[in-house]
Each structure stands twice: as structure tokens, then as C-alpha cells.
Image 1 (tube, helix red, strand yellow):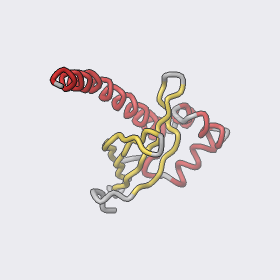
Image 2 (cartoon, rainbow, N blue to C red):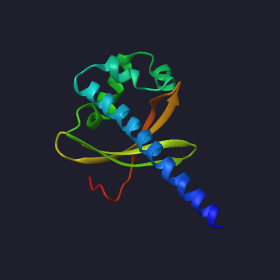
Image 3 (cartoon, rainbow, N blue to C red):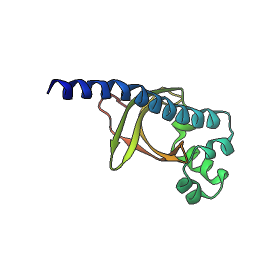
Image 4 (cartoon, one colour):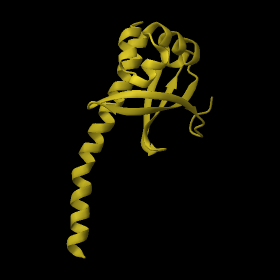
Length: 134
């Protein structure tokens, strides 16, 4: 019993850095896309999208137009904070709190997909977060 507990503890300690590295990589992708939007580089922002999203919109310009119109707080965020990374509905979801140009907060969940070893954004949805009062 004691060796089983020790084994579990060692396994948890070894997996924590991998989990932190995964979260850092995912957050880097989301930040990279937002930075690309902020600078007006829709081609670079489009590269962070999953192949499914790229296929849905076809061009970086169409994708950029959708973000400008549907997610203006992502197009030019005033601030970005990262919340929890969770696995639900068979996917990894990164909670992001974004404040728009007027300081209004929005909670978004980013669905992340790993494609050929690289993280890509597979979708974004608005969520109701009690910690965020819009």
C-alpha cells in the first residue's frame, strides 16, 4: 500500500511540469493569435486556427471579418487573463477572461486541438462566468 501511494505521488509530481508546459504552450498560441489580430495580421492569426476552422472560413480575410464582427473584444483586447485549463466534452478548453476597449470583461472558452505536435485553436465560445460581471 505504501509503495502504491509513493508511486502515485511520484507520478503526480512528474506530470505537473508537463501539465504546466502544456498550459504555457496553449496560452502562447492564444496570445499569439490575439497579438496578430491586434497588429492587423490576419494571415498570422489564421495560422493559429485548426484545419477545421481554416476549412470553414476558407481565407484569412473571411476569418478576420468574422472575428472583427463576432468577437471584437478578441480583435483588440484591453487585457487578457488566463483561467483554468480543463478537459470536457472530449476536448481541452482554456478559459480566457478578455476585457474589451471599454474595460468590459468577457469569459471565453478556447477549444484547443493538437495537430502534428502543435496546438491550434479549434473554436471559441462565450461562457457565463460568475466571476465576470459584464
